[in-house]
Length: 379
Image (tube, rainbow, N blue to C red; front, side, top):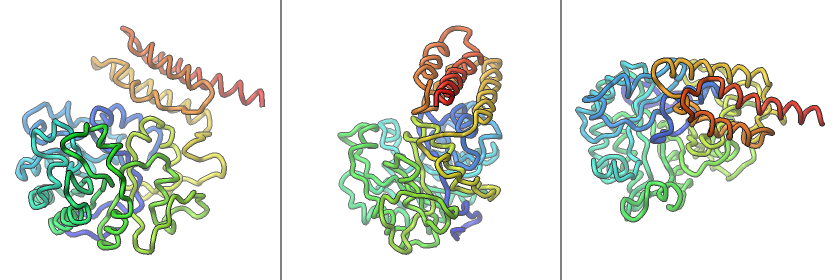
């Protein structure tokens, strides 16, 4: 376990996480993701501290207990407000408080937080220290390697050094710069070049600080290549994407849109990563059956997931919600499976109609089951 200053210790490396994504990683997505992976660390969307202090806390922070382990990501730049929002978040049962120092959207720029704070490492440290004093769960930072004309070699190191001195339990680094002017939020996820090497060098300089990697990771195999292979299950077959020098292996990997758009990828994560909270060992990896591109789990597994999502949707609808709130997060499942196109068509078309209920989920899954069974019979 990485040793960190302060009153909390972070989860034992290696960790697999799904990145916080605005409008995507809401409570419905997190429930869905948890059906696919018991061991992934999930994150909320960024929630602004002021909204928590002034708004409907149950609406903003309420979540199903089955989502845990789950981290609350906060946006803001006022140490007192961040501390109070963190305290409230801990009371709602979150396992970690994460400070957003990486989002470059116009919304956060207008509030001078998110990636803007890469330019104010002292203020980030004040916020971290205030949150650490307010909660007993881990407090972490998610950042970029720099913004605009900053030299990442200097900007990232200063931010991490300040945050570490303030007691941060971990730093998750999106290995790209953010350009606050001239690029949209989407372009900032794609255009600035990745610098994984800088993050690995940073780890060598801070061997006792948990440092995780985010940005540009498209497959589980690619993500695994950044970790210490000695900590992965014996016999795990990993296609190396790079050679990691001694002392530079990272402690965690965080996937965002790749895991959202091909959500079946999550079914493979438990084969490599222990449970962050309980320490439950990774599930055995069966050769040629447990990969992030061929999700060949049993139909019993998928039937159980179908039923869980249908029951969850029924509860949500019963409380005044709509089916589409749940199913919009499910269309990325079954990539490459027979029947996947029909599955997407059913969810996309039927879930939006008035009065749509859990039967839509059953019909979509059944389309895959029937096509998969027919292919197996033909083989």
